[in-house]
Length: 330
Image (cartoon, rainbow, N blue to C red; front, side, top):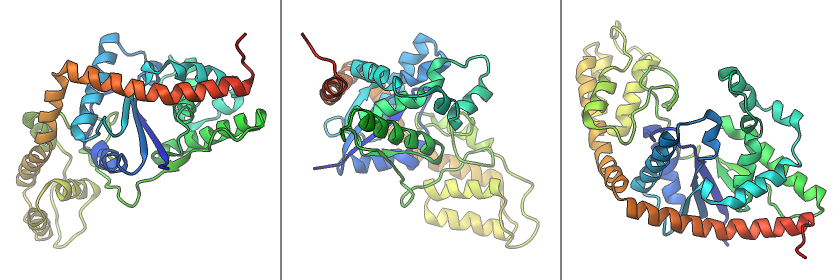
């Protein structure tokens, strides 16, 4: 029997090259090896109070991009979180066994309080409980996460273990964080440091058109150029070389690295080449995204099929949980 893997993404903007190489390529492979649930976490996004039009549009965007990248809704279960009402009830039940002190101590909550002091809502406090619910409602064994989510996975394990202890059962497995470290390609951002990310504003989105890609790449951080032969490139320049290693032909990378080593590098030429190569890489995905986004009938079919499959699993779990807790019909 295949192990169950679950992963969700908040609909807060476009997916980018970092998402594609950091996770989505692995999801495409995993959907054939595991029982996979991929969902758009629209309830999670409500902690930032998105405009209704933006919320719907962002959900549509993320769905289209998942599909365009190669997630197969016939194989994996791809669904929208809010379509599965059983999640809301299990979330309520799990909140009854979660304590304010432990929630207030979570790193993610304290970070959100720091970043948005005027919007410290209950959803932020109980975010780990909803995340736990997303996982255990399908009795998932593995959850692909980054370093920043490790504490939330540990809390999910704690909440699952606490439920089992309180009700003297072994119903919920304790989910494990799943790392792609062996296959992970770190995609650097265009700002000269760190990794590519939505909130950092340093990303090349999968849906960006050629003009946008060119503008972003040409604006990437550089320096005045090397001053010594064979010197080690600073982080900002090495980031450009790493992007080139993903998007360009090997001989192109070798050429520009040699130019840098000889103090003959022309950053404008490097950026123009990188822009063209990234456009060539992303254009087929972009075309597919636009095609899917314009096909409302197909998207409706996908989300309805995904909701039906996810609801079967969620309803079975909720039924068992209600019986374990002691709810009975008369």
